[in-house]
Length: 92
Image 1 (cartoon, rainbow, N blue to C red):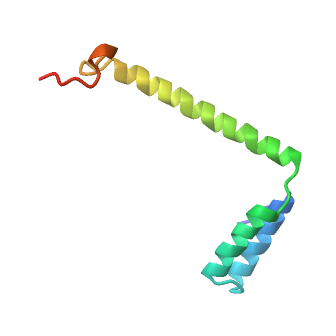
Image 2: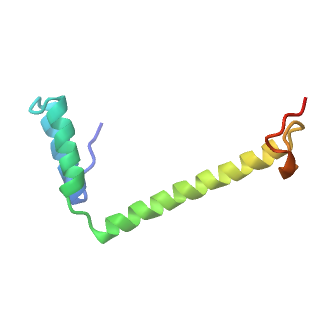
Image 3: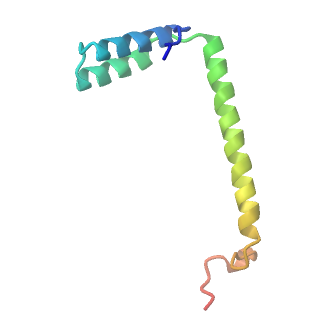
């Protein structure tokens, strides 16, 4: 498997952290601490932030579409209450 070339400072820091872990230079606790430090202290560019925001918005929109389809399908089930006044009432 071919490793991808790190593009951003964060990618480079992550690659270096994984290299150290694979070389046995970091135990589990040191790796976790270094990972937190990397995420908190590695600068990212405005372009990287914009890319992340775009990806998050796409995921949110996909989830919203699936939720709308599920709600539409569930609303057609015979045991689903359609009267808002009856929600929470016991119907035996």
